[in-house]
Image 1 (cartoon, rainbow, N blue to C red):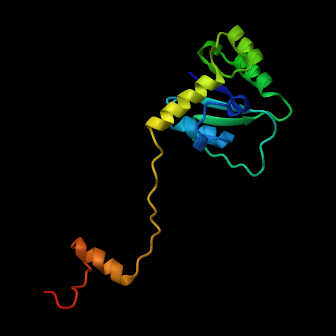
Image 2 (tube, one colour; image 1 turned 90 degrees about the horizontal axis):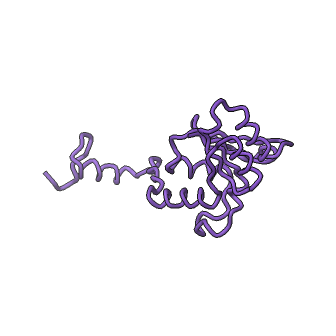
Image 3 (cartoon, helix red, strand yellow; image 1 turned 180 degrees about the vertical axis):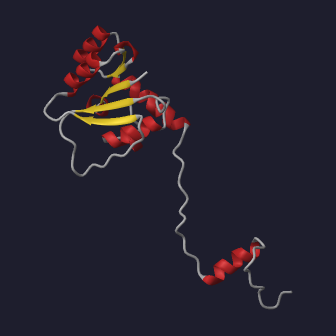
Length: 163
């Protein structure tokens, strides 16, 4: 089921996020979604206003960030549902009552912003982000030789005094 997320409504929920996740940006929300139960669903993060010039956002084809310009996110979500050939298959994430009413009229499922954030936090706790190893470590020649010798790899010089 595709998700239409009232992004700023979600980001302004208080009392749900643990301190280490406080103050997220739309790109953070996208990262959390990519690591959650929603990662295989098409997700549209609908944000009020223009895209900030300093914000970069690069996601796979399943997460889209939509900046509405002068249009309100509420209106854009309603328009996206109205133009959908299957609005009943959408999930709308918002605690805004007007957005919820518009979604209900179209037959879309509704998830409140705090509930959605709770889902993300629970999922993040279960699947911590994998850390990418630092492959740019430089070793001096002596250290390189020590490791080559330790693992019995070709190119290892025999240390002096050993046979």
